[in-house]
Structures are given as structure tokens and as C-alpha cells.
Length: 323
Ligand SMILES: *[C@@H]1O[C@H](CO)[C@@H](O)[C@H](O)[C@H]1NC(C)=O
Image (tube, rainbow, N blue to C red; front, side, top):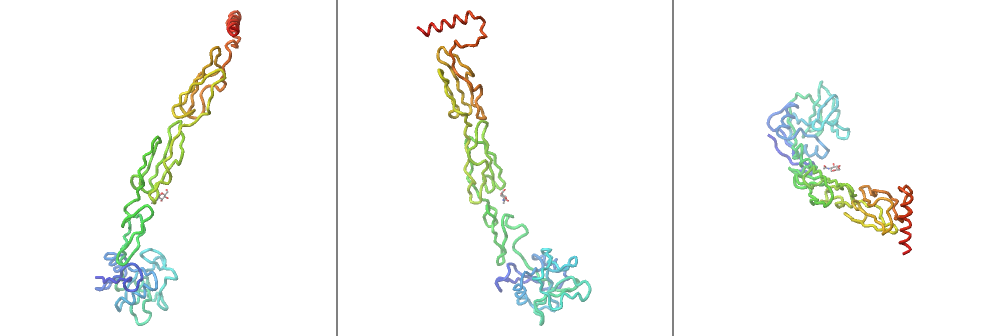
């Protein structure tokens, strides 16, 4: 069984606990299996202080201890991360790795050796040594995968990404529920209703235009990225009554806006040229002709059935004007 060593208590180094097999020795493969079964893995030594700490704290063993480095495809590799050993991280004993016997593809650490203590040596993997393991508190998918897991003394702490909180980052930031009026809203909620990263799109019905943002996002600050937009009726150019005439409008959504209708009429004795009524459309234009005025009835087109009747009307109108 292992014997826990806490590097933080000992020297303030590292963030995990170390363990070793104090009963029995193992080949490198068996040692790795042992560490992975009872702890996290064979140690992956990060720095010089860690090496010093291990050398100081572990008992002497004539066959020394296996660590988590081996030659893979001709390259010395940290097995836990599958990263190649960098020059700076190397800690070989003098003259090592020497590959004296063939296939010296595994690495031992000299603990409490009279010379070269704490250094590494390449050894055949089938040799039997103690397993030097570590245990990390952070699990493979830590902090609900919504934060960084930080190893602490014998435990861990989650540093949640923006938008999440709680010891395991399981809780998500809430924004106020949106209740728009007179505007269509379409939301997507990746983490829960009106929560962090929820987005809502806004659309106005035909004949209306949006004032404000088209999309709102729930921010880590619990605020929406903008205010809810509003929809206002599209306006048409203002109309006026023709000379000698009148205009009468009904406005559904506002003066001369989408849905407004205006009717035109002329004073007695005048006739209207152009549309009698016009409507403001969704595109901001009026239906019907622009040209629109009142003309004296006598000025009517010459395409009349008979000249005689035209003359009669004309003389009647002139008569009434004189009177
Ligand atoms: C939140 O949304 C932004 C923008 O789409 C995206 O870049 C980010 O990855 C999202 N964050 C999470 C945690 O889903």
C-alpha cells in the first residue's frame, strides 16, 4: 500500500500527493498499472524542487523507484501527457542515459543514493522496482467542464469560467426574463432559460421597423447586452389637402404611418383629379397617384357625348357664378 506524502506540507511544492508501493517491487508496466489503479499515475516530475522533495521524503530502496518516463518511438516521453521530455526538464545522472544493456527504455529515480541522489537512470523495463505514484484530485472532466480545476493541498478548487459559479461550476448566471411587448422574440437557451449565453432575436411585424438591437445576449454580469428593442410603424410622407379640397385621414398607428388612409374630396363645383383615397403601405409609400387636385367641373375633358350638352352645362355654371 501507498504512503501519502504531501509536498505542500513538506516544502510548499506541487499540488498533489505522492505515494509509493511499500510492499513488493514491480516491472515498469506493473508499476504503472499499480499507480493507475490506486492513484492517478506514475509521477511526472515537474521541477527541481519536486525532485528534491521526493529525494528527501522517500525511504532508501536498493532497487530505487520507477517514474513516468519511457522511450516511445525512440523519444523519452512523459507517459501521462505523452509529451516529449524537454532539455530543461531532464535530470539524468552523470553519463546517463547510457543504454548499457539493450532496451533500457524505462526510467528510475535514485532516491537517497550515496552519489547522484535524485537523478535519473535508464533501466530495462522488466526490472522490478517500487512504483512512485501521485494522486491528483482533479478528475478527468472536472468542474462540470465549466471551469479550470486547480490542485490544492490534498484537494482541488474550481475556477469557474465567466457565466458559471458554485463549487463545481454547476450553477449558471441568470438574466432577467424578457417580456417584450409588440415585438416578436425568438430565443435559444444553451444553459437554461434566460441564462448565461442565452440569445434572443427580435423581429417586427410587416409595416413596422425595429428601434434598437436585433439580438440580445445574457452576459456573465447577469445583464442583457442591450435593452429590448421596440417596433414602430413605418412612416409615409405627410399628405395635405388639395387646393379647393379637403382631406380626411384615419391613422391606425400614428400620423401618416403604415395603415393610415386618407380620403380626398373637393368643394362644391370642383371635381377631383387623381385617387379618391390613398393608403400608407408597409414600404413607406402611398398607394394611388401623386397628382391630385380639384378642378372646376367645367374644365372637363372634351370627349363628351355632345357639344350641345357641354355648352348647356357651361352656361349654367357661368350663370350660377354670376348669380
Ligand atoms: C458564449 O457565446 C460566445 C459567443 O457565441 C462563445 O464564443 C462562447 O464560447 C460561449 N461560451 C460558452 C461557455 O458557451
